[in-house]
Image 1: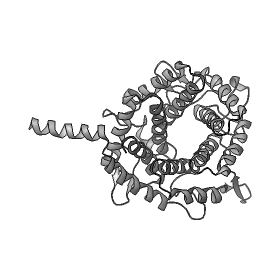
Image 2: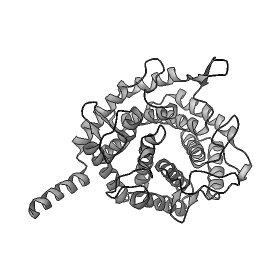
Image 3: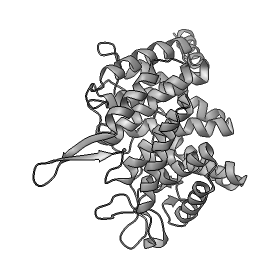
Image 4: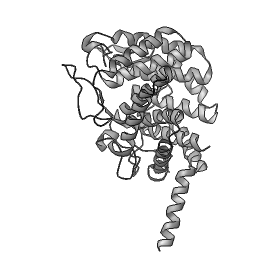
Length: 363
């Protein structure tokens, strides 16, 4: 019995270490096709996913194209661009339709997700109109900057309210990615200015190496609300700062945040990524968070080649395809440790990001 158990254990460890690329590939391609089937032909975006979520579903689609070379994603990118740049977001007090144009709305973090998606679109296709759109969006994001709390941008506008981690780190990430794509010095200036401000806010909790959600009215950080996506975008920012300055302290901080996240703060006892509360993973926003973390952990791994990050991605992808996959709908759910919960384009794309990165590591 012990011999059989040991054999099974070694097989599982072999699959995790080697990644079982054919298994990743099959589920990845099926999930991607399911995702594409959930797009609305009129609006161009995804059913059962919110506005900002759809930017991340698109980003997962683009990443799939970049990793696999599959040209099927190219018309999807074009279709989203053409149909969603004038998108109805509701009605005003008179009942007249309200639209967001050029992917600009009342939330600066929403804008950041769309800007980053269009930068990735440009990188994949070389189509300058996507880069131009990202620049238009970023220009609007700069209107959220103020000297309140010493700097930074607000989370939302009309009226300006709440300075938090996600809006500011997306602002910084968009700035540095635009700088890389355009070499315009203004973007590098914004990046360094905003990162310098953020580092002094206390939103990086160095007691436990986790990112706090935002600031209170007195500008002190909120404590205790830790979400996977905040950790992910922050480690990308710190890694980008290291690449620009060659200052290893930024990379070391990114690693400490990543290490805390994957070892004790936001994982199950089995080491599978999760939110602090299960209901967050099934919420309209939280359903998208974990894939964002993995996306940026993979970026950190590209820089550090730290085996723990590779192993974590592969382990989570194994759990997704074995415990969180629905053969009937050919899609993934929101709980990566299982069981499959319900069909959702946001949950599917979130998990798909992890499977894509696992496939990329093992192909």
